[in-house]
Amino acid sequence: MSALKEHSITDEHGEGVAVILPLHEEEDLHDLVVAAERRNEPAITLKEMKKQIQTPDQHISRPTG
Image (tube, rainbow, N blue to C red; front, side):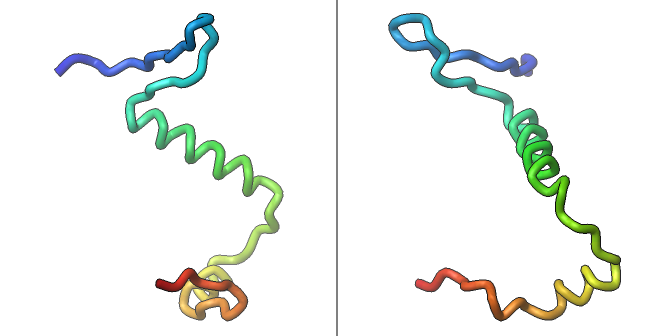
């Protein structure tokens, strides 16, 4: 199997409009974005995290249907 590389998609003027990435690279980039978005969130203890996981938050609306 050949190594997968990124590919650029350009419009008729040669301007970049999209990039095709191997899935593992996209997943890595997504993880970096999520980490950056959460950088300023307050830290919580492991005990508090376990409590949040075990007790569903009643304030979060869940999609129906």
